[in-house]
Length: 242
Image 1 (cartoon, rainbow, N blue to C red):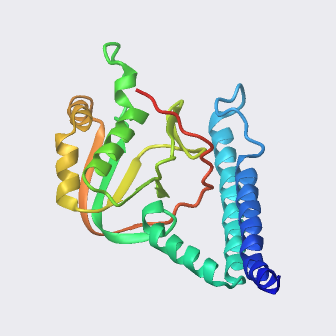
Image 2: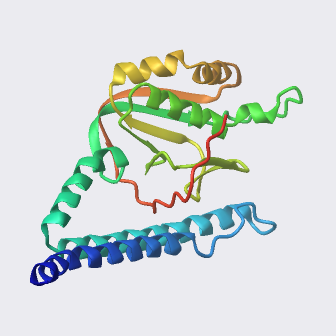
């Protein structure tokens, strides 16, 4: 009986840590997700509404960072062999999760809407703007070329990141952005550049860029910094499609 009691006391800090971590991540998710409205407003000044939405999401993102810092402090205050093993495994996985900042050689891709001059009735205005699928095409090509980390508009991309169009803006993790759209990727530069050249989707955009004067700039950089993912990880389920 004495041995059993000693074993239970040794595992008690790990149990407390688990409760704190689960509670902390639930608070993070609730802090960012609560109070969300329809991304397609039914009235009012759209630019002002988008700026207000971006400010509110930035505030919630800051709150999420503070909650994560609280969780980290709780983790560091608990000791135990089991905990040390778990933390060592977490440290090994962090570089691939996107939760730590990364620096290294890479590339920068900038996509910009075409300048609108005159009112030519033969031009489809949809051909003069950068769409979600254009951005996604370059992101996919960068991943295919071996990118280790990618940012869009300065925000780290993860497997769960959604890129959507709302009007003439692109929404990334709930925050609306206007062009130019800037992607930066860390990884093997030659391979990423080759992947963008050989991708049918990016080749199509490049062709349209020449015809409609859309902005397309690809740069090879010696040093790129992609910051850590700052939003909550709130994947509730996955569904296979195809």
